[in-house]
Length: 498
Ligand code: NAP
Image 1: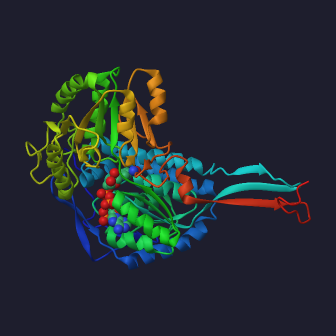
Image 2: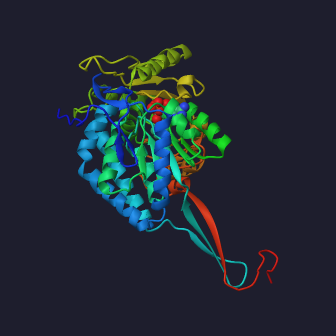
Image 3: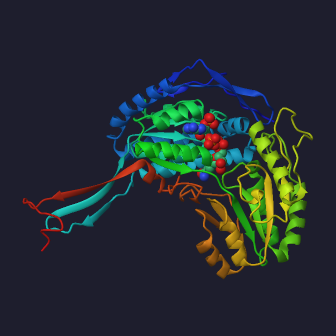
């Protein structure tokens, strides 16, 4: 196993283009081994104040740089990310645990996002439209909002940051970013890349620290005009209510309880592959992870048999080993949460077909591993079928019809991703219409979003905004309507219309 290491033992904040040391720090622990990878600063609210002041100053100048020139920095960031893809992926696996193949994929998302958003530097389209009065011109354009605050989770430490910071920066904003304390290394690497790419000082600032201190200080800060948050529902709701009091724009991307529907006319082997990838990839710690399989009763037994056989072949261990398919769980709290759902599921009457225990065979004893787990005969109202577990746990819910499958899919508080396996074209079109989620897959699992489409969900998953895609620009821009009257006289809209 090759292992790339960091050149520093302790990270530093990146404020106004300077690397700023902070005394207080905590260890970043590799979830595969229990070893410390690096120390991460625990900053305070004064560090946030400094970052916001730097961002505010830098943003005024940055907004005046023509967008195609702002985009040149992003192209450079894209090239540097490409050059360092393997290094970044290896570090990502060490801080987060996801298997190396997935880590490479996550860095690739950042590369794709850099080039896609750099292209926006020559678009950022507004509209021109006829005015209702003679000799009058009307148009709308996107304007930067100012200083934006970005708060990101540990499960996608680089991809989510690029979904948020790249559109913000190309649109002429300055950014203050608080990465998750569990996974700060990608922020350090990305800040270094921005520095090398020639981003002016203060346009991107990274402040490490706890959500309850640094995150909260950002939410409360009057100099920050937008908060873009991805994380858990409870944290998101609190942030939204604080932002509401200040009339601060807030974009929330939160949890999921995603399902794959397997109909009686589905290609079962294909469905098994999709379930394996969606449920056990990233050890189920994805917001789009499949944690429910809604299966037509006619194919339930055959799906169970084939899924169990495929699960037995999954290799569990340190994600730096190329042969491993299921890596560790991020921390002990994650393990405790998953374990608690084993008891909940059994007490509710679900039948445990596989897994259900902490995995300790042939793995580093300092790591946190959980065996891929399958419950069956689950009913739609059970807690294991309703609540986000965030681990390698799937519940099979048998149904009698297509209509019931759609109802079960939609009968949860979240609405992020859904999928249907069927060979009936009529069902395909009905499903894509009726599945109440922000993302729908047909004959593919619940994970696999591409960066040029909007990412996000309905209901308890968010508050109507989207990350990535051109839609991300809506979070980081204000629309301005502009009227130019060249008649040389007073013309009153709605009144002086002939
Ligand atoms: P979390 O506990 O809510 O943390 C997310 C971020 O918010 C971290 O940076 C955290 O900081 C910070 N934070 C915590 N308390 C805060 C506060 N009071 N004020 C401001 N910031 C605060 O969520 P998580 O457990 O890391 O992430 C897992 C969740 O994210 C899951 O529910 C998953 O479904 C969701 N997720 C959603 C998407 C999506 O796009 N829909 C994508 C990925 C993940 P510290 O941890 O450093 O203290």
